[in-house]
Amino acid sequence: MKKQAFMFLFLIAATIFALPDIVERWLYSNYYAKRVMIEIGLKTRFRYEEVYKWGADKMVLVHEPIRVNWVRLGQSCYMGSDTTLRRSPMLILDLEDLAFKEILQGRNLTLRETDDGYEITLQDTGNYRILLTKEGFPKEIERNYMNTKSRLIYEEVRSLSLSKEDVLKNYSLVDTEIEFPKELVNVLNNFKFIIIREGASGLEIEGIYKNGQKVEIFIGSDLPDGAMKINVNGLEIAIVADKETLEEIKVILKK
View 1 (tube, rainbow, N blue to C red):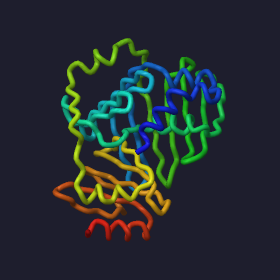
View 2: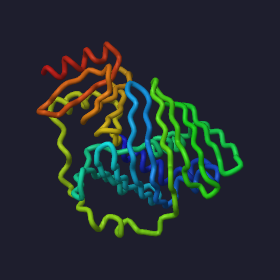
View 3: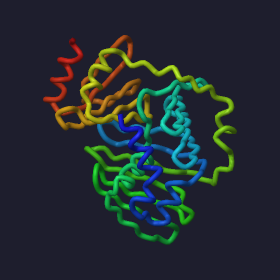
View 4: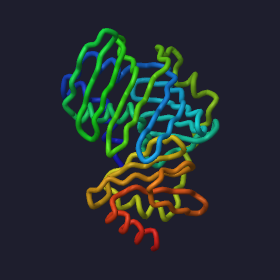
C-alpha cells in the first residue's frame, strides 16, 4: 500500500519544497477538536466526532451515527468500536489527511489571507477549500470530488497539551490485524492504490483499480443507494464504480 510513501513525504516535505508558514503550522500542529463531517453524494450522511492530533499522529473518536475509534501512530493504524483497537491492514486517512496528502505531493495551492484567518484552495484529485485560523488550526475543510461534496466543520478547536500516552492510556492497541473476507481481499489485490478511511457508517475503501478507474467500497450499515451491494459472511458491502469495472469485480467475487 502507500503508507510508507505518505509518512515519508510528511517527514521530509519541508526539505523538498517551501511551504507557506501557515500551512506548516497547520501540518505540524497539536490540537483537540470537536467536528462534524457532512457528505452529500449518492446519499447525504453525517458523523460527529472528536479528534486529537499530534503532528502526523492522530486519534479520532466517532460518536454518531455509529461508534468507531481509530488511531494512527507513525505507520501503524488501529481501529475498533470500544477501547480495544486492532491493527488496520491499510492506512486510515480522514479528509484533513487527504488535503495534507495533496499538498505534500506538490499540488498547486492558492493561499489568501482573510479577516479572521486564511483560505487555501487546491485543485487536483478533487477541489479543496480549507479555512484556517490565524494560529493555523482548521475551521472548515471542503472537498468536491466525483459528484460528492464533503465538508468537515470544526465546532471547537484548541491547543492540545495532553501527550499521546495520556490520551491512549485507557485503550489497548492489539497488533492482530483486522481480517477482511477472502472475497474482498481478492478484489483489493487488483487495485493499484488503496486508502481506508472512517466513513459515516463504517469503513470506506477508496482506490484505483488496475484499469485506472476509481472504485469506492463501503462496509457497514446505511450503504449508499445506486451501488452494487453484496453480503459476504454477514458483512454488508457496497461497491461504486463504472459499469465495466463492476463487471470485472463480479467475476472476481464468483471465484
